[in-house]
Length: 146
Image (cartoon, rainbow, N blue to C red; front, side, top):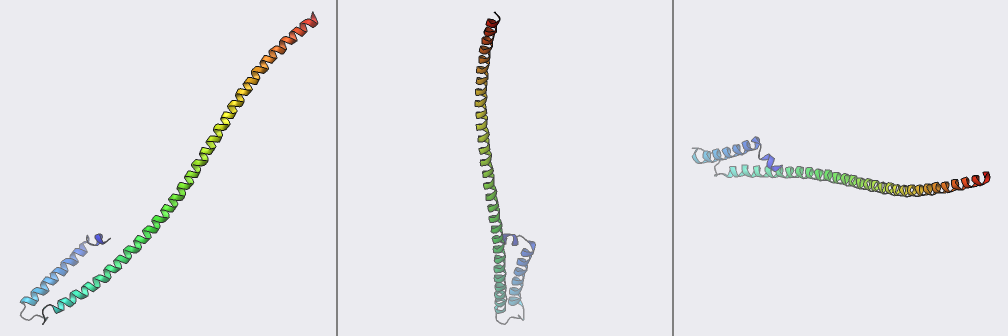
């Protein structure tokens, strides 16, 4: 912020005005037949002392304003960090839940595959028993008829 103040044309114009004023004042006191300051540069010293006192106040006010803006920015940053942390925790919880659901579905798929394999085995055994029963029935019917 302080650097921005030194880049404005108004500030450079002010510095130029102060320098021209100082040079004109010194030249007037040295070469004028009747200088308005009887004691050399006492009035100029007073003017510069007042100027420095005013600039000190302006600098302190600028620092307070900059500090309050920095505090606001830090508070805003803290709020953003808190929100980001909450969102990150929420995302991690969602990913953990998603992972648990995926594992459950995988386990269910594995159990269904095992059940399917058992069911196919039972069907094969049943088919084999059916053939045996069918053969026994034919033999039985063949004995009854014959």
